[in-house]
Every structure is written in structure tokens, then in C-alpha cells.
Image: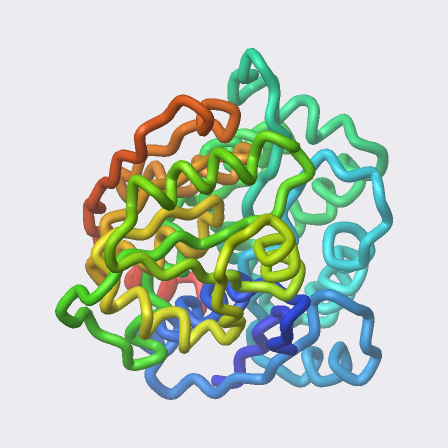
Length: 318
């Protein structure tokens, strides 16, 4: 079976390693469900005509984790016009699996309810149009409850599943090892108080601490704000580090989940509603505005029902 994976395809210092960890987990789950699967990579972040011709030659296509529905009013291909491409594939007879779709609502105080976030996202210009297109596809996987509610409001049937990034480690052949260090994963911010708050976290984690930046922008910000950070942008390299990490402090959901899958205890700071993706693993988060007065608490995950997820994926593909 030839399966097109619609995904960010380039690994670079300006990208997000989490994108590739999401897709790595999907590759592993698909192969576990359909051992004879072969993959064709289709660029998600820009409209490449040759890629979509290749997608039309596939038996199935899986939209890998993104686009996530957000409050953005931009016209990015991956969150808007990509649905026209997907609809064309569907109409040509290619089965489209909308895999591990997520929602993103910016930080607000007080925090809105799931229904309020879903209503607000659905009201963004053109969003209802694309949700109506999504209704045409037979299979949808949501990775958070707001995304599932958003689909419910649009009359789209979806299944809530643990985020695929949990299964990135077996795809990259990374296994848990003895803990050698703790890691603070830096994240740039325009809030003036944020750097001082991160320094306080670093002091509390002092000892065998490594400060790591997963993008060039984070690395530049860290250096300007007095951190001795390491720049590591390759997702497999990050996983190998997390496999030897005792505790990980992060603002990135798709660092927390893969790290927890290889044995790290994680502390997650929520900068928006995407942190809810961690709920299915029993991983709690705190709001980033609480960081100034928060003592990091680290939690270990509840392992997901792997056999159940593989069985559900097989049912969608076969």
C-alpha cells in the first residue's frame, strides 16, 4: 500500500523539530498497522504541484498532525488552501485520513471553556468553509478535546487519540537509557520578565543541567539573555538526549511527549491551549504567566493503549 504523508519535509534550524516527531510517530503507527506500507512524502507548508501529483498516485494520504486550527487570520497554505488540495484528492478517489489534528487558542485570563475556544476558532474567516470540506473525508483523528469539539460543531465525526509523537522513539530506534543530566529547553519570548523567570528555573535545576535550544531563533534569544545554550535542531538527536534525561523543563508540547515516552519526567509550561494535548498522557501543565512564582514540578506519564491506537489506524487505512 502506497501512503502519502503530508508533512513538513525539511529539517532546518528555522523549523520545529516537533513537526518531525509527530510524523515519525505516524510512520511507526502506520507501519505497525500495515507492515507492507511504503511512504511518499508530500510537502505540507507550501504548495508544490509535483508533490500533489505524487499524492494522487497514492492509495491513501495521511495529513500528519498539522494543519492545526487556530485563531490566525493569515492565509498560510498549511492551514487554509491545503483543504482545496485534499478535497481534490478525495474527489479523485484517494482516501484522506486527517491525522492527529490539533487546535491552538492563545493564552487568555480567565481561560475560556472548550466550547468557547471551539466557537471562536470556528468563527475565524474562511474557517467554516474549510471545516465543511473536512466533513467530506471519511476519517479524522483529533489530538485534543477542543479540536474534537470543533469538529463536532461542524458535524465532522472524529476519534480522540493520544498524540502520535509518543511513538517517534521506536521509529528512530531510540530507547530509554540511564539518566545523565537534566534539560531546560529554552523558548524565546517577548515578555521582559520571561528570561529572569527561566534563569530562576535553571538555578533550581542546577547541577547536571543542559540548556538546549531547538531552533536558531531560540538559540539567539538564549544567548542574548545570558544562557549558555546548545543549539540542537535534529529531532533524532534530541530524542537521544531525552533518552538520557532525568527531568525536562519545556514550553514545547512535542518535546514533552516524546521525552516522557523515553523515561524523562517533564514539567510543561503552557503558552496556549496546545498544552491540552498532554492531558491524555496524564501530564499536567502550568500557565506561563505563573512561571515567575512557580517551583517546577515534574510528572511521569500514563502510557497510552498502543494496541488500541494501532487497531484504530489499521481500520482507517484498510
